[in-house]
Image (cartoon, rainbow, N blue to C red; front, side, top):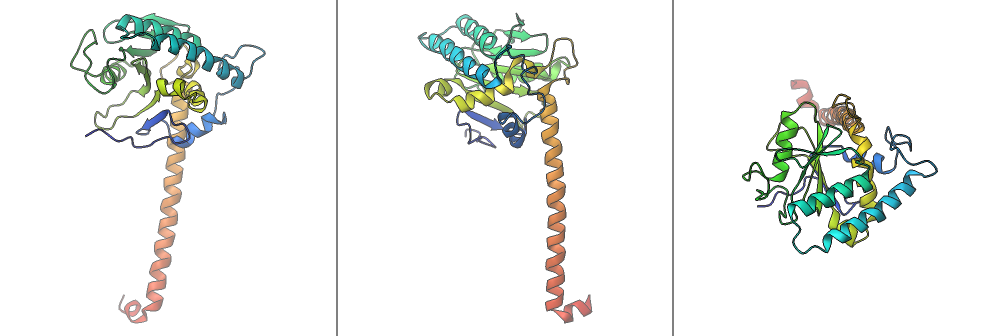
Length: 263
């Protein structure tokens, strides 16, 4: 049976969130550009442009790249890699991609591992026949293995050209956590809203600068902020539940004086 997404981000129909990679409330703040580290300077926006204008331009550039790729009848691994390299570089600011060995196709700034397989691998969670080093693993599992085994990489991307997934180091093999975007749906349906939040989440600047500790990046700080907000909300709810239970108990005893006497 196919695994059901734990959370569906309904405001952005081409995005799916599974697990708690980044809290949905935090993603909503990112979309409103109310999270930390979201100034034009933080995103390295070209002078004279706003973030909104940069996203609009990136959307059209990304569409053009995807349309050209979609015309290929059966894209090879090499063709998919060429597309993804240009797509990430010109749409999401990945100007420091370098070829990588093993299951990885590229690595950005020595800290953003990227696994690329062709669209023939329809699902990122299914075993891939095209991974060069281990054809018994899925593309997503190959990336997860790399993230878990290398301290210098904490966040990464995996894609088959039509889907792209943001993942993080995660010791749990039974509770996956990721944010996935359906690129084909974004382009076909002109889903600018989903593209905008995807751009804000996976722009190269979100992964931190080369040479910095892996934890020193906007994505990690957003994740931490969402976790802390969740803890505060749970504590607040626990207090409210306790007050409610105490109120119910007091009311019950007042209505049953004989029981109160025996207690």
